[in-house]
Image (tube, rainbow, N blue to C red):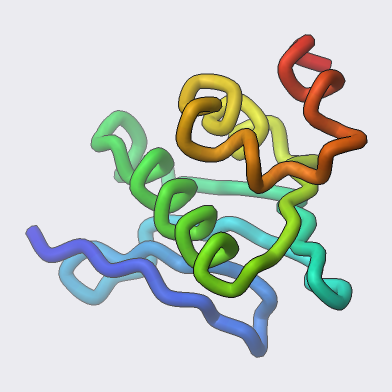
Length: 104
């Protein structure tokens, strides 16, 4: 199974595909140097395969490479950052870090 994550800028979302088929996406809003993740969805037939984590990781890694500050309004992305705080908490806008880590 081949897995690929791409940034579909026209749709303002990162998409994850398996063998060319759309398996899920992470919707965002880009405002200057800030990216706000608002919704993540994995198709039911792909749930449980770890694709959500791969999607979040790729999106956050891309945000880092573009020097973007992350606002994790999507509960899935927020939870992913909490679970991997040593890798990704530094991407979150400083004013939001304590709130994020409190699980709010």
